[in-house]
Length: 263
Image (cartoon, rainbow, N blue to C red; front, side):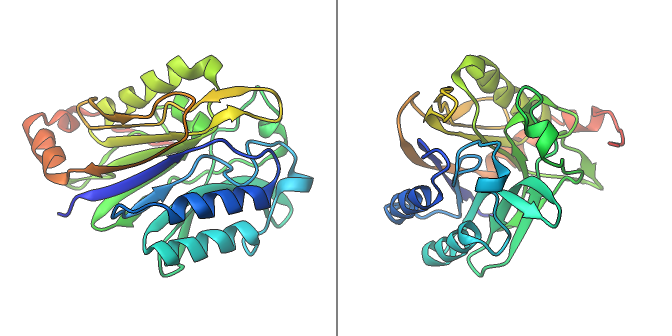
């Protein structure tokens, strides 16, 4: 199995200014020179985490989807980000994973943040998604999902792991940064998988500061890379499949995992 190169972008966001964000990320992504298979952007990369659907929501044919499609094609790499989407008569915080050929998969955020109006105004998703990329299996999650280990729990499907990389796209504020860092490491250890967390920096439109602390963790819980706080960072990290395979075989904790059904 080939290794997987993932690139995350830790960046400030322009509050509810779609075109400024699209122009910004177009320039940043164009500047990536390393070979990469997947580029990851923070949650609601195009508007910031705004609970203003009348102004910020788009359809799946909108400008942000067009940006993702064009950029993935131009870089010949998969691209993932979340967008506030109007889907018929409801609003969802939707993660889009788009391949260079324009095909895509989506995941709608399951856990909506009750300390904001997200839980009242948006609709929650109810399906986990496993995304194939270069023989790897990826599971996408969004921000607050990080606090719910059952929803992200890896499982054995026959004699194979359900996923190899679990990733979170987030707008996670500084006031809860300790939980962000601790839980990302925990998710890697308990699931015997690589974990990536991509977070924004800067102050949002509600005056809430974010320090980023984006990171990539290996299945042993070791930090492969952690971005400096409060700094714009573009980083490509190589995930070594053979290292993960050997660790999983040597420490076959998955054979003792509890089986369960999620409702």
